[in-house]
Image (cartoon, rainbow, N blue to C red; front, side, top):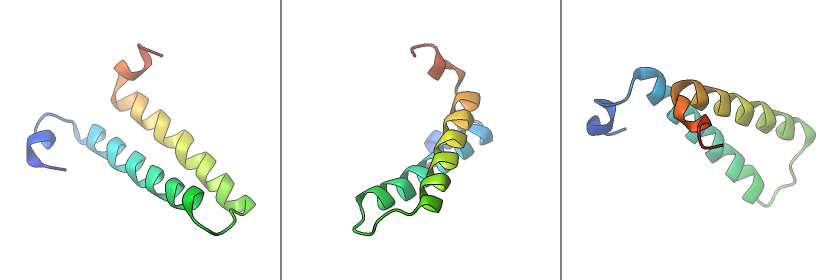
Length: 67
């Protein structure tokens, strides 16, 4: 992340964004790939996305205001 953004975000916020990006990238690769997705991969995506949502909501409480 660029230094400009890093100066205004907490370490927890940077971690939450990074983890969510990694989870979304992996999920996108699985969903848009040519290979079928096995049950284990679905379970991993389910856990990863749930964890990312919780981490983002903790790091950025305002996300829950508009939902």
